[in-house]
Image (cartoon, rainbow, N blue to C red; front, side):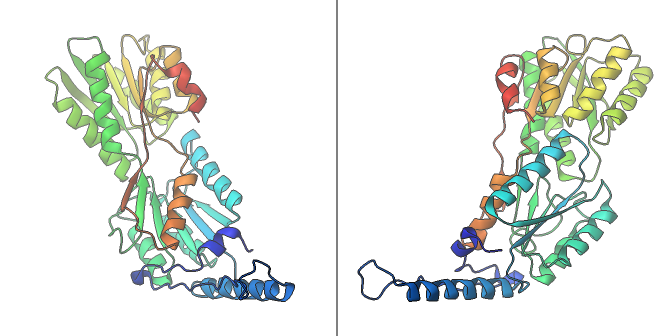
Length: 353
């Protein structure tokens, strides 16, 4: 599979630590300088280009195909579905062969998935790590095999710029702290008793969304987190967790902060089933920006969402190509995000996923 993009990266030089080198292509300019190129010269140029392509690929797997792998931690909700669709769409648009594995929220399976992907002669690998620590052997395996790695939406307990290229993600600390700031400015109450529903423990997003929110809460004397429990990123699990917290606290809280929209939607169901009014009696704060949750803002049942854009494809492949072209890459690349509330929900619904 030959593509225009591959021709553009024929002069690449990959990181020395990954042990992959590139080569340059002769453009086959005509010696007479007339701007006219004969069929014979054109054929020679095409042969040289093909040979150069083969040499570049030969440094990694030698099959002349640029194959990109993606180890996704799960496809368990609208956010992950949108992320996968974005990666697949951009890969297809650019002409790359794209292979993907779904870890199904299982750290051991993700390690096995990466091993299987590397066995398919990858030229490049994207990983959305399930667990910061557990993913390290997979990153080391890719490095040993000479396959460059970019992490998506989560960090790892390895060294960026050495063990892997960089991480592309949202500013999770900002998301958490901004939710607390929004509550202070828009909550309409003298004091706040807050329940925090986290994602599955082990990911850098969970760590930072919790830390950011708790940093925000600490700025305000009238805010207190009375309970923190994991909803495992699941609407169903969050609904069960919320039901248990309602029973154990007697409903003595007026804010629920959720690490994603799916869990916020489960919380809304639990609150309504208990005769409580989400959005009014109990403020519901969330993170992501999926369409169903934005519609819940319009309906008055969720109050605020800090967005987390799942459409990684354009930035991911642009960053990969910059790296292959020898350009400097930031170790952390943050997606731009914003707040959705009743003031802009109808407008932003069109951008939801």
